Amino acid sequence: MSYMIKNKLYQAQDQVMQFVFGELDILVPDTQVILGGGTALARCYLNHRISYDLDFFIGSKFDPAFIEHMLNGGGFRLQVTGMESGGMFAAQLHGTIKEPRSQEEIKVSFVEDFFAGMFLTATVKGIRTEIVDGLYHRKLRTVSGTGEVISSSGRTLGVGNRQTARDLFDLYILDRDIEPIDRFIERINLNGAGFPQDLFLQGLAGVPWLDLMDELEALEVIQPLSRPGVMDLKKAFDKVFKRIL
Image 1 (spheres, rainbow, N blue to C red):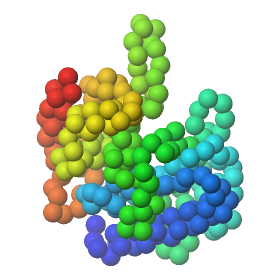
Image 2 (image 1 turned 135 degrees about the horizontal axis):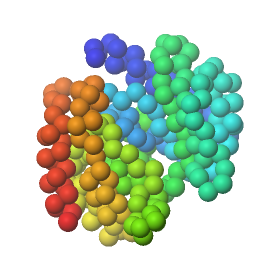
Image 3 (image 1 turned 45 degrees about the vertical axis):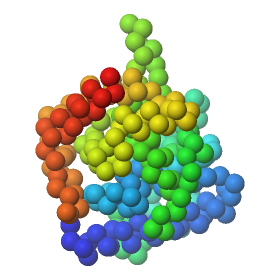
């Protein structure tokens, strides 16, 4: 990606963030709202890859229709791709918008934040997010899952976990450049995070490495970093697995 295209994307993301944070500061003034996910990691701390999605975490239950109305009223026409609003599940809204000025298409997610307040918030490069520990913890949760269920055989399994190339690449860089995963888990659990390392190991054991080759090739890695091969990632996480065991 050229500098001009990257700059256009980031400017469009900035316009969306400015609108969302500004509106929610007025509408839910006592609720923590941050940007998380790969874009927060990439733009605030790691500068390792281009990330297109904006993942907003809202520190209280919310009505997805309320967020949809807010975006549409601000000229950000939302095409809804997923919604969850009640019961035992976290409130969620997922979709795609077009930033009015640039017409840049951006995926957005709004998720009820079960981890609000666990780590300090921070404004980094003008973006309202968390300290890197908080984003690291959230990224680990993508592999471990954010809940647990007991299978018919009595085994505890993670709920809501995923193993995508971008998530594993993010963790690969965090492990290499910020703090080794095993040490990080040990440190945050000593401080009461309660991170389920057994479920994380289950998630790692279930990664379909060969199926990730095309997705990994499609990652837009920012120089001077080079894109690791899928077997390089596998070897790195095999070492992580052994260190945790």
